[in-house]
Length: 370
Image (cartoon, rainbow, N blue to C red):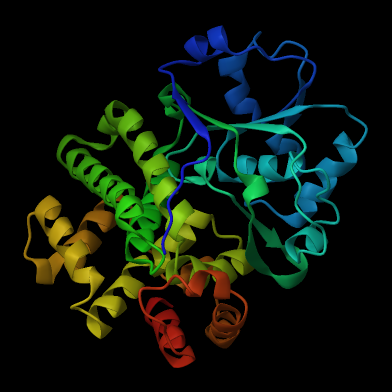
């Protein structure tokens, strides 16, 4: 039996002003936000306790970051957590709503039971994470030089708020990497063995919207993306519903060790491996579920089904130039370590692969994008 569910309530607003007319911030709130985003909420956060993303370093979320936040908030009384930001803020905000989240390693090793004691409201400011509707938090565990995911129902938000206005200042590079990440979420979850007809509808709708948007941007110019922000934000959430039910697979599993070791932003690390893995899927099992996906993609891309990944590769490269792993500092002697991490550690994700790769096949993929 395959089940499907959407847990958070989802609300849409065009502007922050509209949202704040319905939502009162109080002294029982803990707001996790970046200073660049706070300007949209100027004068509206009232007496909420505010902590800033930039006070805890840059880059992807880590266990060290969460431990530092814990030291700063452990004496604050709050009943509601509002995370306003991208993947880092969302993934950390989920943990801040738990009764106990330190030591972080014990939580991720499940020595601590994840129990929610705070209300959780998530407001995404990128078009890629999808985490605003999932029960998953991803951190880099610095002692292990790898990213790991914690997936428990206590991490589901109570409410997700979509406000396209908050994406207006998103630089083009981050727009591209976050939306490519959403496309990866959509396509991996579509092929997952845990997918069902309901989750696949969300996954496929997300993929269609993102690729259609890319084609319009290539035709009308990079600045045209500002006209599509509501669509890309919605597509990201659709993809989040897809992978929240069906999971992601080898793209995420293989990007975690590479991205964790060289501090490559999540969407960008996924992009490095995305097409290589899907081309391998196509080569090894062309007549399975991927054939149905390819037919759908061929209609959007207006190309023969046999040339879907070549054409998608071209489109993605025009949206954002693909770089090899070595351009991020990776060394060839990392490949064995990355392979071992994928096969031995990332089993939560590899279980969702369209097919199961051998260690040799995993290493060959790493080598092809090195």
